[in-house]
Amino acid sequence: MKKIFAAVALTLAFAVTAMAADSVVYPAKNGNVTFNHKAHQGKNECKVCHGDGAPAKIAINKDAAHGKACKECHAAKGGPTKCGDCHKK
Figure 1 (spheres, helix red, strand yellow):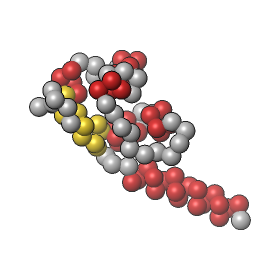
Figure 2: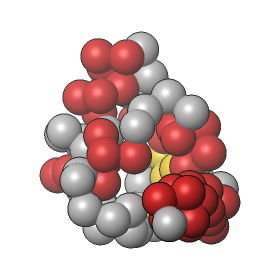
Figure 3: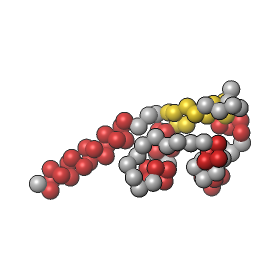
């Protein structure tokens, strides 16, 4: 029974990872921001962005993107931080 439960849990974990969109486009006045989920997924654990709950699409607004959700992490880990690096017209 434990082996079956473990197999189901692993299958669900991989299914959620496989279903995640490769990229998400966030519209913005000064140029849309394309978030490459697959690239970020390889650099962070899901809970870094999604918290301890089940992974789901994150609602990002300007304040979150320019704060803890994106820019602060980019600054700490060497990601892009200039406007034109993320915003593309």
